Image 1 (tube, one colour):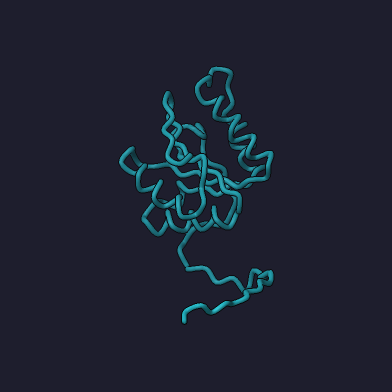
Image 2: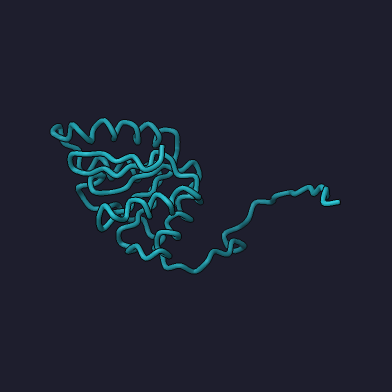
Length: 147
């Protein structure tokens, strides 16, 4: 009785047709401040729209807009390059993983938590938006939030 088949067709939407909940998240491109990516949760998204929706979710949950950055591939490369040092042995391995994803055209979201207590909340907010390789990169440690 409930076996009703529907066929959905999708048409590309223009920017004007897309209605997004009005959560104040800046759309201007800003790079995270040095020492990026240390002290940030960095995550990867196949789709830029998923990264933006995750940023909206973080902002709606009370995270400061100034600590949330949606980055396209070229932005990530520039942000990582601004703080490259041959002494960053711990984080240089992680840079390679993310730079590989950047070469594939992926999008990224970086959020600076106020403390470790927020890591579980960030994980819970990123997961529904298909985030992967979500890791908190501290000065000497790395905490994997999503594989």
